[in-house]
Image (tube, rainbow, N blue to C red; front, side, top):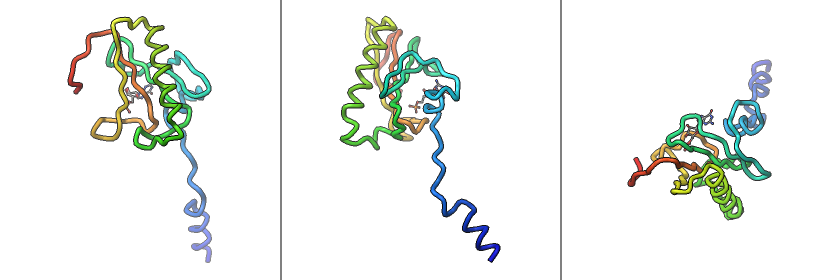
Length: 130
Ligand code: 5GP
């Protein structure tokens, strides 16, 4: 009986505690981050390991895990992420051009399961990307 009670209340019957993503912790100022822009839908922050002179991540406040898990309800949000990328690119002086990327899934080397748009610029890009 005691064993049953212990197992029943060990957490298995409770809803999982939702863990914040890394980007949510940065947005909530629980982790350090260089935030350039924020509004009610998203935050733009500098990448900690920049792959170009400007490397900014535009991250929705809603912790949608990936491009694959976006739905039609997110259509306006996705457009907004691109308009914020455009605004940040202008503020960063990327007049020669820039690249935007969503990595989706392991083959594309997505490492943070909170969808984000990469904005890269300030150097000549090559194609195809690695
Ligand atoms: P992904 O590989 O998922 O497309 O992109 C995740 C990005 O998050 C990577 O470019 C990586 O450098 C960046 N990143 C990982 N940890 C941190 C962090 O703690 N702070 C910031 N600002 N960026 C991070």
